[in-house]
Length: 97
Image (cartoon, rainbow, N blue to C red; front, side, top):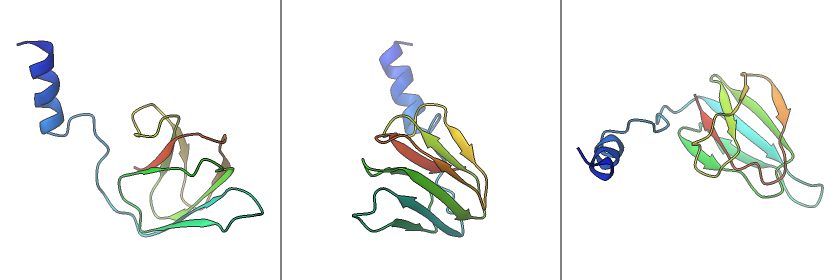
């Protein structure tokens, strides 16, 4: 099977994608003192972080993965429910596990 056809087949069936499970609660992302905190209610799937993201707080009932790319494809830092983490500006994205 040609590589391109195999890749299309895997994508069609969702292999390697982030599950669309929605968690209960909120994820808060703080950037700077000059802008409001960004809040994601009952997040599920992949979200691109604001460019100025500095701190992510997980107030959901699920773990959150912080990824180094905007598409949630790279391995990430796990943030447990009730915890937070510093994130590098331009970190990329987060997903709900």
